[in-house]
Figure 1: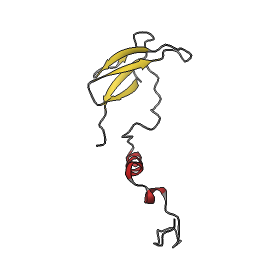
Figure 2: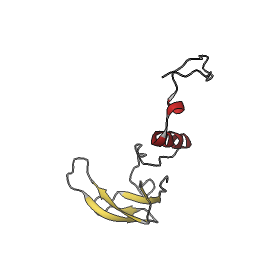
Figure 3: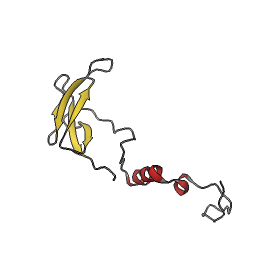
Figure 4: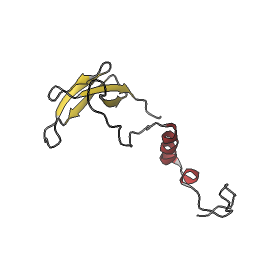
Length: 107
């Protein structure tokens, strides 16, 4: 697909960039990523230590959310617990810290 406007790249006939041809959900995600946000939580989360000073961040649209913790890398069991808004909370099994943060849906 070629277009004929001069887009500043010195070529009158050029293939549109991703930003120029994006529409719908793709455009929303591209614009949000330029602002530094991830409205649909599709990007890899920031790595955290799981300590009290650097807890795992859990986005939520409500004031509580159920969280599953796989306490050890090769563990097959999941420890489920409720995480409430406010201070960081610990996993009842391994002690890793989790913090609930508000998240707004893009619509």
